[in-house]
Image (cartoon, rainbow, N blue to C red):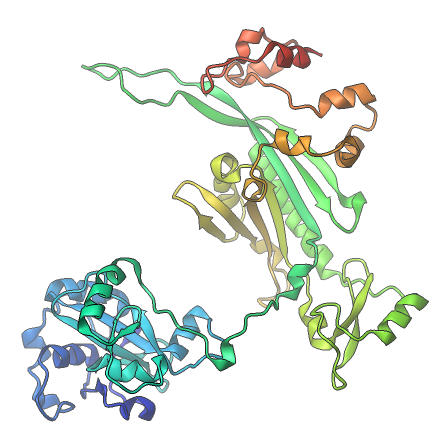
Length: 506
């Protein structure tokens, strides 16, 4: 955002007599406003001749006009001054998209200083609608309390307003005590809802429908042993890479919630397993887009469904009653043609397919993400959105499959959203599986339909794996189990129990 011009301040702000608007030219309004604050005029405050020339009192090395908001930090350091920038809420909403129905003329922070100095300036940013997008004007806020008083309270008495969070106090001492903590923890203002914006209600009704395609995946790694290196001329290093985790097997189950025949389990073993898995997701995204693009006509209603539609009093989407003026329509699933229920016309239009395929890993954040995120980001075109916990740990990340946009810019992309299942089910897979009765394991049973009941019980019990023994792909070709001692884990300083080892040999 670049700011610089001269313009008339709106009447609603001008009548408060809280802002000084110094005439400027050549996009120097920022410098003029700062000079007005640092060298206030005793009279004729809005005359250019009441102030020194900005070039003689300000260090503007490397500062170009119109100034970019990102350059204000540099200006602060060069001139030993701190600057907060405020704007009308309407201008903020264009960037943040919040506050539907709120007071659009409310003053809110646009940019807050990181280090408040003795010389401090509050500026007001006003968009210049005549000169287009990203152009605007700066003016000096002489009295912040007077400017924001009407939006904070109906009381007209003088107040001391915090110029970070816009909370107000009746004494300077209370404001000073508040400012100590506010400067460390607050970088925004709390804006309370008004009469038109005081109720929150759920309106993303398309989120109520089950997603048609879901992927559950897991991968396994072999642990390649790394040799400890000696430091020349000294003792061995204190820390070194003991093992390298190399993915060797990936499996995933595609669950189609409306057609069991489309559900399938697939897996891949080998050094290219991650690349294979990423390509499988890419192909799946294209397949899903084709499904979404095909609008299946509604199946003819049964007599009971026709009667239900005629007698319905509430919309099945928003669950609100039908009014006499409402246009009632038959809502149906565009993937199957199944009739879902009576709906408002507007609810029916907004009840669209969600172009997202969730991909669940158990402990994605702590482990699996490290092996798939690079391939997901680079193997095919499309942006990646991260929800990070730290620089190396992600709560979730999404990949836009750009090639699924086939019908112009208004066409929707398919997104792959990788989610950590452990965030919702905070227990090990072994523990979670133990909660299920055998009759609930229908998906596993379908995949291994030819197994006897005894063999199926062996399959569904948590096994043991000699992770540290398998330090290379050649160990995977062994035709018999290694001895029990090979199941030793340096993490737990334990080996497999005799019972677990006996189970593994069966």
